[in-house]
Amino acid sequence: MRWTLEQAQAWYNNQPWICGCNYVPSSAINSTEMWQSEDFDLETIGRELAWASETGLNSCRVFVQYLVWEADPEGLLTRFDQFLNTAESYGISVLPVLFDDCAFSGKQPYLGVQDHPAPGVHNSGWTPSPGYLRVEDRSHWPRLKEYVSTMLSRFRGDRRVLAWDLYNEPGNGHMGNKSLPLLCEVFEWAREVAPSQPLTVGTWKPSLQDVTSLSLSDVVTFHCYGDLPELQTIVASLKTSCPGRPLICTEWMARTLDSRFETHLPFFLRNRVGSYFWGLVAGRTQTTLPWPSVADKGKHDLWFHDLFLPDGTPYIEQELEIIRRCGRGCSS
Image 1 (cartoon, rainbow, N blue to C red):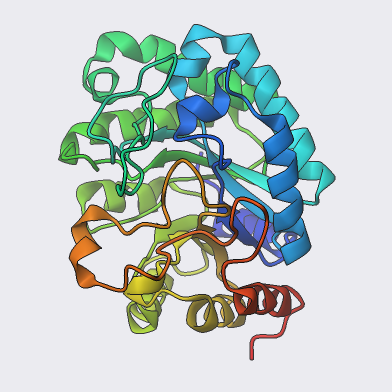
Image 2 (tube, rainbow, N blue to C red; image 1 turned 135 degrees about the horizontal axis):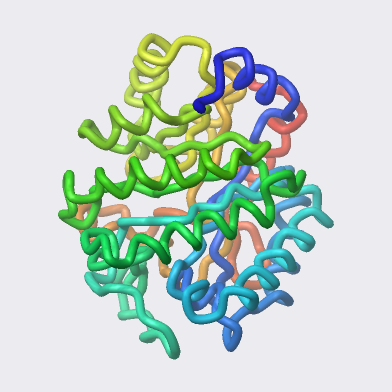
């Protein structure tokens, strides 16, 4: 059963103001490379999460790849536990994402050696989870249910897991409403486990999936890569349509689109809206480059996403000061 407003608010009131990032280690091009055994890079993860902690971040959102679990269930669970331990050692909670329709690469997920980054292309290796065939073909759903049930059962009362983001951007990659049946089923499977953490799926564009996500989520999560007026409009709309539900923006920050730390982070703090900006360390995802859809907008000398160079040098030192100041509760 969906959490009541009282349950959702009680959980949120027990959290610090959530100030986090979407995290992929700089050594990984996608969620497959992040989690499969031959590429799992705990040394890099520890070094980079230390930088996050020193900056004042207290949470990270990470994408889990179903194919890695399908091929090696216990291995994936072990590596996920190691990740949680490392994050906890730096005072960072984890928001796992179990499914994802986003596919910048135009490819479906595959195991083994991943392609090298395509020169000059944002997120050229990013693949969805579990992949569009498994989303549409219900013969795969028993294994998908086992994945969801196993992950949530293993960590259902784990203080290191902040919440469960069940499905990132359902309908992306031209899937449209074809993802809606699985979206509804994933909530059902997760409810059967009844974890102590809240369940959510973020709204990201006006769609039937968004309406469904809002009606099923315990806490409201959303994406906004627009400027401050656009963000203010979205927050006001969600406060009206979902009164009393905590709000967390799980994707934002695109410098060349005027989604900036100096404008957005103080707004999030003043309104106690949780925050996960995109990217921590520049690496194989190449998310310092703009999305292909906005690549013609110029400003190519300015990073699109990410906070640090691979050696830990801040890209813009003043941005770290804004994060630290907001983390201390100062919004101006």
